Length: 136
Image (spheres, rainbow, N blue to C red):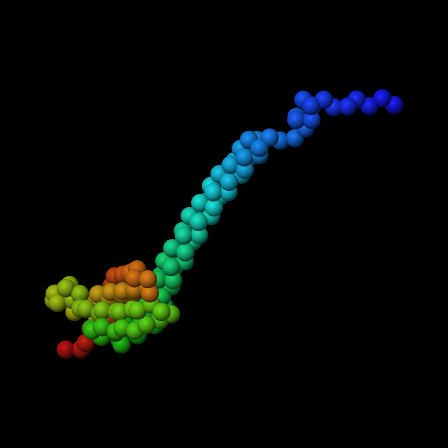
C-alpha cells in the first residue's frame, strides 16, 4: 500500500486558525451578552410587576377589611399589612351637605385608601361609599 506523506502545506490546513477560533468566540460572547441582557430586562420587569401586584393585593385586603356601611365613620385609620403601610381617610362627600327636597336615607362618603410599599411606591384608591343618614 502506498501512503503519501503530507506536504508542509497540507499539514497547516488541517484545523482552525487562531483567528477563526477568536471570531467564533466573539460571536458566542456577543450572543450570550444579548441573551443575558434580555434575561435581566425580563427579571426587572417581573420584579416590578410582582411589587405592583403586592400593592394592589394589600389595597384590596384593606378595602375588604373596612367596617360595614354603618360602622364607617369620618376620620382615618392606618396600619401595616405584609410590610406595606396603609392609611384610610373617610370624609363626608361635599354633596352630602346639600339638602335634597325628598329626605334621603343614604349619604355619600369619600374613602381614600393609600398604600406605600417598603420600596416607596404608592398606590391610592379613591372611592365613594354610601352610609345610612343619621336620624335627625
